Length: 241
Image (cartoon, rainbow, N blue to C red; front, side):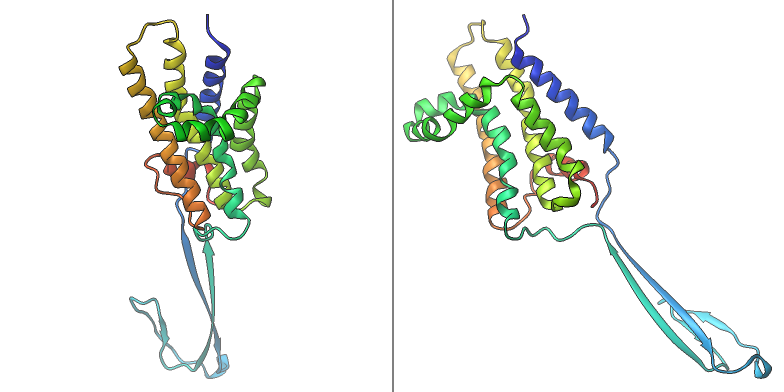
């Protein structure tokens, strides 16, 4: 019998895949410079003389045998702002990482047993939230939808860096789906403790390192765009603006 957690994991994976495919066209940061030159003749057409136009490699234009005035207008378009987080955005960008933190907490059970201080911290701060989180069956899926789609629909009221962190947190959570399905499928199987502990510890180190890195970079005011594969996918899902 398929458990409710596996069904939720499959639903989240399907939603994440469809969301990523919908925004699969990667738009890189770009910058466009446009130079418009308007030339005004200072001589009337009555006294006009033949003239030549020469364009240099620097795209400068010269008129021979004709006085002229050049009005230059420069326009510049940037795809998105800098990678620095300012003010409240540093805290807002950290909030989405609560989703993978709570979803993957059970992978740390062996580490909490071997390192009692970490177990105490987990019992005091994380375990109560996990209990509340799991008491509502569709709460993880709801939070996933809010972070994945809600941040896009509310893009006008959120900075791009906050939306990027929301998408990256979602992708870290998606990366936990396969280990979760495997763990749920082996519940009734007598797996040697050494193998089970090795697998759980590996997953815990992976997602916890990603969360600590992202939160630390956000608090320092820098965009956490250094996660392999995940950061590039988050850029794609966030969009160019």
